Image (cartoon, rainbow over all chains, first blue to last red; front, side, top):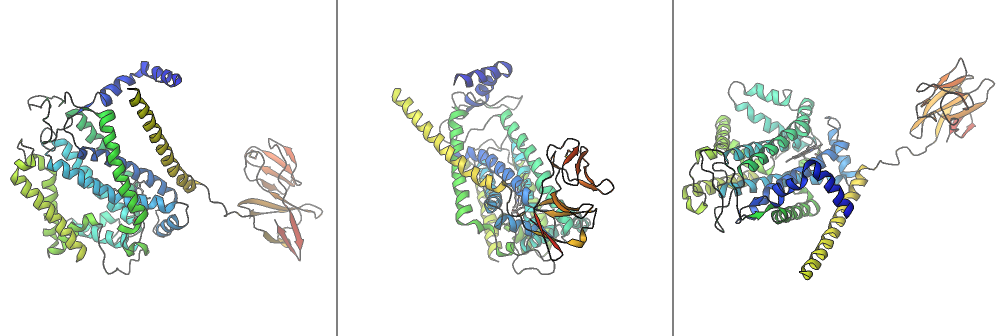
Length: 367
Length: 140
Ligand code: HEM
Ligand code: FES
């Protein structure tokens, strides 16, 4: 014990570790009325770390070559000891991470935490959301199955509706007129290098902004003690008399991560193919399109929107408009009130939007 | 107070135990996933026609996942070695004019019998067993 203490002292006199611990952990006070939804961010950090680790492990045996990709993934599943576990963690993890992300966004939405002075937090989070969609879309192609091939064909094709540049854009995305080996090359690079680096950078920005502004207090529960930002000059929103991050909220984070892991592992062990339609088990064949080719569940609403509108440009523009609206939400909705029950218009719109999204997804799934 | 600290220790130990179990449950699959696959280079036998190894020449071939060599010395004696240099593992070359082996990495020399004649190799080349029958040489 005293050896550990000596080592800590040795480091402490040089770089002041105890001061950091005091400032960032034990003395970092959170609102008294904070709730479990505030731990979704930690769950997401954990889920992303898990994707990075399992992804790096997959890279050992995965071969990014159109002739070998499917075989290499099959070998990971059947021959490499515990390869199935690593791959299932990665594939199921990607879906669970999107789910966690949706919950995080919804909690921020309903507690009004995106409102000023936290607009930048929302914007960086929104960019993260699109990047996670991007990393999933590019990862989906990598196993080079029928599902991979045709889902990517359809997804990239939807860009062709853009006037003038559309057809060229599609070819640019694919690296060739049709999805083929060049597509695999660029998607692989995007999936394992470009987007992960981008996500890591944005996570950094997101957390940095959070630390500079201070955590928001939920609009309900115990009365808040926050030193509110006045809007004239920079000031950190403190919570005097609040809950220490360590150990109190760190434990709450751990609890949420444990719940997340329980659900995640339940899927991995009891229903690993939950997110795998049967075309995921057939190697890609550019000459035969399978009967029902559908995207992952979180793209079903987009898919259905494109199907409803006979004119692809309208379908695509609507999606673009919805995304832009969401991205700029804090600048559109700039009232101060954050309690959801005191914002009837906001509630009607967001619940309506959510139901619309769910409805479109179910419709897409059934059609 | 005392009660409380007992309870803390107890819970701490439980948590530590669970953590250790979880770490083991993760480490074992991870180790197995990363461990090299055995079986690929099972010591199978290699058959080489006698006429492929004329007098004074050497014939290199793949054996047990690495390189091996058959030499017919001047006078007709046949010998087989692992071609892996005993210094740091490069593959030796046959020098027909000198009737010896040269390792290109650090200039090790071996005689046609595999004995070290110059350079850093600490041990002679490893001999392999073989049998000759019906015009074929079977190594292994
Ligand atoms: C540094 C981070 C990552 C690396 C190195 C990586 C690497 C890989 C590799 C090699 C594959 C092909 C093997 C397979 O299909 O199972 C793959 C597939 C995939 N990855 Fe990643 N990945 C990373 C992060 C992510 C993240 C953050 C997500 C999603 C949120 C994701 C989603 C996917 C998906 C959906 C697949 C296809 C899964 C399947 O159908 O089996 N990846 N990834
Ligand atoms: S490895 Fe052969 S001489 Fe060094």
